[in-house]
Figure 1 (cartoon, rainbow, N blue to C red):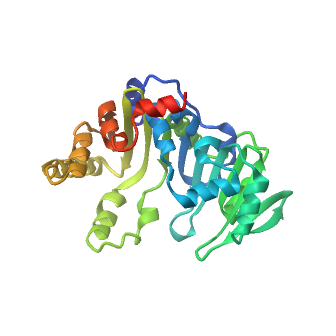
Figure 2 (tube, helix red, strand yellow; figure 1 turned 30 degrees about the vertical axis):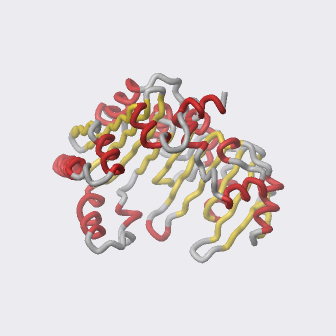
Figure 3 (tube, rainbow, N blue to C red; figure 1 turned 135 degrees about the vertical axis):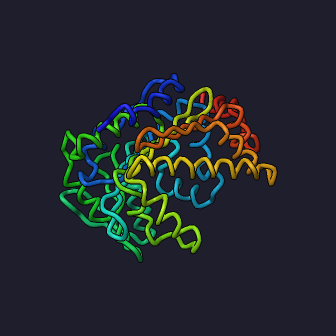
Length: 323
């Protein structure tokens, strides 16, 4: 349920941004598994409205030979052809299944041919072609519901999406749907977890010092969370919210964050990268409201320029190329 506490970081973020609100694609949301517990979204069209979002997208593997070959073989360039992405994960741990839904422009025949050339097989499910690839850890699949809608992920999860074709309303709970719509309306990229991160990371952090500490402490005390990233003419804003088991746990989480920030600040003279990171973190707002820990980090335009554009290309050049 949305409350005054859960709207706090979004209210701050709405005040920070001035661009038009984006929305999650209702068609993609209707295709999401109704039992999904972790969902993430990226509104590519909305991100492109900002110079900084446009720059981030333009840097996707731009100099990678494999990426360029992928574009040549499939005719698909995610920087140009994607409009929106929705990822949904059901289950937890080793039994989890993830499906990624995309809205954009897809040449299904060309992508299918390129995939089969790399060892994939093609089969039919309820009138649609499935491009299936069997790996060591899972059997994955890609399908195209139409020329503008693609789905990929675990084979069973992709079949589930095909089963939900034609639905106009999502099967997700009202509370999750409302929260997603709020996050998507104020962010270019967002995530929502209805479960503790311990459900997914337990036993998977190999560091013998860090793993047990996180699993026994921080991750176990978080029961849900959400966050988002928003680019604007003034820079960027990152918000995150953790829902803790108790007010005491929320305060303890805030103390951990403050300690981490102070640790970075105390080591900022060690090298230029740490100094940049410390500069960003010094603007972080930390708020505890009952069992909610709210974080808001604003990154000014000048800092973004220095961090991401100084060594490659300027914001002005990016804008000029795309205008």
